Length: 161
Image 1 (cartoon, rainbow, N blue to C red):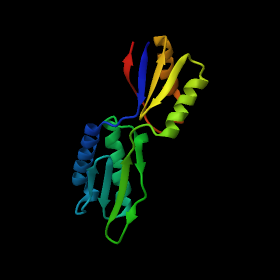
Image 2: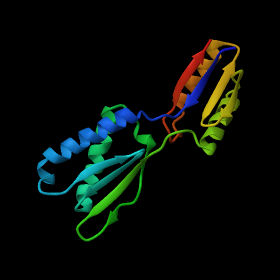
Image 3: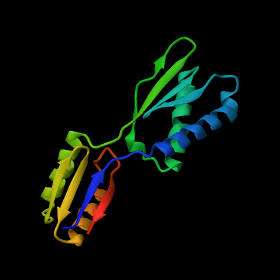
Image 4: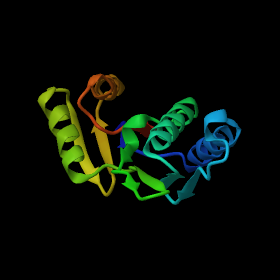
């Protein structure tokens, strides 16, 4: 019986490359000369450190641009509020990964409401979709790609025929 998994994964290697490129750009840009501006990556959290709120916004734009170029969807970025003190400004960007329960329920509900003859079941942080026909599974993929209100990027893997 054909099946595939719906997941939301983040490529850590590409994230590391994006942060490295952003750091390189900050060190070479004229408007950041003489400032102690940097990006730090710890697990799936990127910390932006600089001297002013304006520079923090510029750094966030740089990070988003570099992540986009590396194929990281901006939907998985959760930008926290900046912490501004006298001479330092700091902001944390959390990279979300995995399907949480409300999103999984929303996806399963959309699949069931579409009346496509498939079964969808949540398994930890993935959703397994099984059906009798390969065409039905591809229709589900197209349905999910067309959904605009999902706040996480989805990948389809482990397609078995």
